Length: 89
Image 1 (tube, one colour):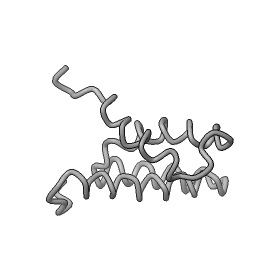
Image 2 (cartoon, helix red, strand yellow):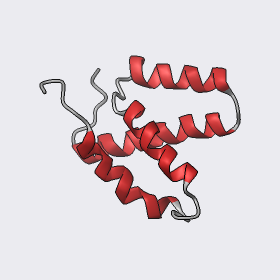
Image 3 (cartoon, rainbow, N blue to C red):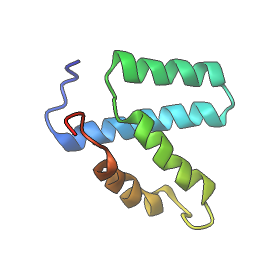
């Protein structure tokens, strides 16, 4: 789906925004809304890296004593894109 993102950095930022929406919904214990958001963003809007980012951000959420702020974890989250296998592999 064409979103109008003309560069990789914008695409990454938009994935992180959608990730935030999903994680906030999950933290509010709104599982039906979380599921709807997740499905909408992945299936309808093609934010295909969200499942990977959700797994990565859970490391941050479980280790707040190590990562005091989101800024402390952001470099790790961004570097996690390098762990994604392409469909050609």
